[in-house]
Length: 319
Image (cartoon, rainbow, N blue to C red; front, side):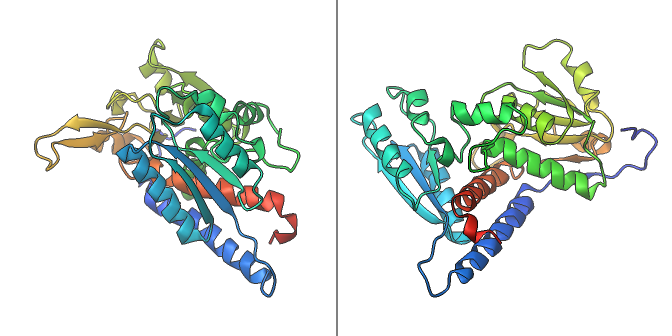
């Protein structure tokens, strides 16, 4: 992609708008599916959330997911273990197994983080792969790492943040009339939840060439300067500088870090991993703001996975 001599155009990738588009598409389809069943027993998608403890941030995230379910016509189930000290692995796993067996539930999500005395891996692995709409089990991870592999019912679940990133890149490339196949992608950050699965999605689903970096990688500026698509998810405030970025690149910033700012009423502001300023706008063809970028699309992607899980289990309701 040679953009050096092209007139520069910058597109702000508005996560709120993209999330609204995705949710509207799902809502419209669910309404049509419900109408299709008029006069009979109505089946609709169902999402179950299991939460342990009362962390304020977790309560907020769960509330947002339930609100999204209500908005789209997805049935919502919740089990909340408020006394996080007395609950055991077995208590949580028993609840998950009940949801595994419930035909009304098409997706199961365990709100993270869990209290430190619980075995997170053991609990997550008790989720049926067919209902792992958060894409966090080893089985789901294995499927996305093997090109073209799916569950028996024809579905696999990409973790919600990487799925949202993929959707943002696709829709932005369409706006820019950009062909993604064969472009060079760089992912900075190698977590199991975001970095590694995002690299796999960029490779296997978007057909780009991918380089996966972490914070200790050498020559990061040089490697970033060759990226047509840059995804940064290392959790280091404004570590990526605009002058490193290739002219015309698409930049997706997953970072969200509070930094002190006495001019703000709450005493801090939220920033990403990329320094977002006028210099970035002069170089990138498109970039996400922080906040208002990846976050809203992550919840929309959870709804999308839940809807697709429902369709895979109800093939007679395909539109």
